[in-house]
Picture 1 (cartoon, rainbow, N blue to C red):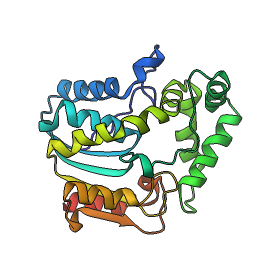
Picture 2 (picture 1 turned 135 degrees about the vertical axis):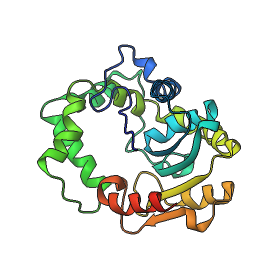
Picture 3 (picture 1 turned 90 degrees about the horizontal axis):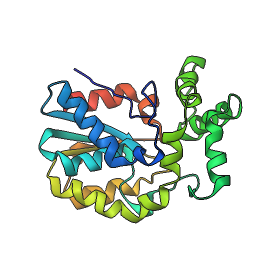
Picture 4 (picture 1 turned 90 degrees about the vertical axis):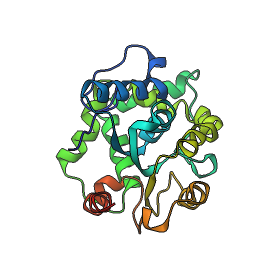
Length: 226
């Protein structure tokens, strides 16, 4: 059984009225409550990018419920985290720019550029692109929160990662080798810090950031066979 929830403010989920309520701990609490309501007490968790920050909070809150964790190109070290820009919520120009994600024309251009820079010549259909862009059109608050907290993430990421390391959750790593936003060095650092065996690591050569689009079959096979 596979459960693939949208984080609040993303995809087809509801939007959260208050900007601060998009914080990563609150998102973690919502996912935990979802699993409780589904009556699921233990699960394997696959996480990518910003979802990794939510997952690190879950590793602190309910480590006993995550039987195995698969980290796909996510934020775990300050020095290997290279966001496109560091925005500040107090800066009105920064907020204005980020809110352009919801613009009917400019938003498409931004998302298309993100998909080009995050993949290695992967061909997205018009439907694929619409799946990324249309949900943002109806509210970019979650994206604004994430991109205006990159400095805070960098300042706190060592603590967040310590929750995972101390949780003793069995962890596997799946990483796009050429990710421009999250350096491949993350894999070496985390493998050494958590003593992760080589057979629990999958490096996708010549792949970038959006690996679940480019290499979904290879990723699924790796997870199923673990």
